[in-house]
Length: 291
Image 1 (cartoon, rainbow, N blue to C red):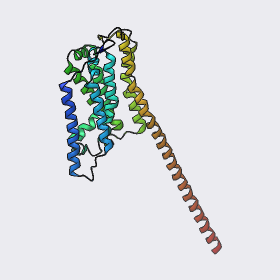
Image 2: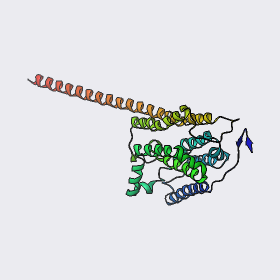
Image 3: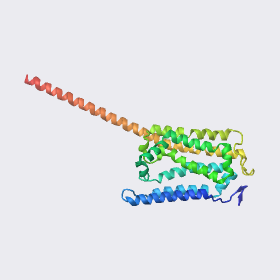
Image 4: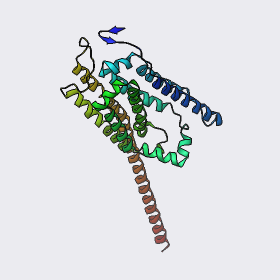
């Protein structure tokens, strides 16, 4: 089946199918076993299951439909659709599906807690994600992924995994791993996306085709395909601004609350000083009258 030169064929990757099944089994079994041990303390909420199912549906949509075939053979734009929707929506949805108690065994065991704390440290998480993304998209390496479907899907799953680290400082559970202030979270959300923004501008304004695809000429030119993919990659930057907006207002709220507490403290000190002065005046009056 074709549409304006785009070949819409289904491709089932055994590697991705196995990875998704393991992900679902791991989530379901871990949730059930931990809930079974302490049902009252570890409730399973419907909205968390809904977040998980939404994440799985996004992954399935982009990895097990003709979108995947087009992304590997004809359109760089389709590839960016895959990557952007997985790292921008599937990963946060997956994180929202994790109950607070799901990682208790990991965080209560000192070695695993130390490893998790090191990996989710904001600078480490950001460098790991951006380096992984840019390394896979070096033209020489990316060309190899297009030749071997298992390598292509390895790239997608590796980006999926490192995105967890990248999102964790903002929306991950167990925030005590890293106590980031609201200004620090805003700075992280802003600076973290800069490498990809620079990369996006390069492929949009380079003027040359960096990733030669077999783009159907009647559908799009090769350079237009690349430029459109770069423009799409700017979407995570918009999401960063969406994330930063509530953080900014929370920061303002914290500043206002802090100012209010300071005013109340100063008011209490003034009232205490006034009471002390009044008591001194009363004592002086009593001494004067007795004299």
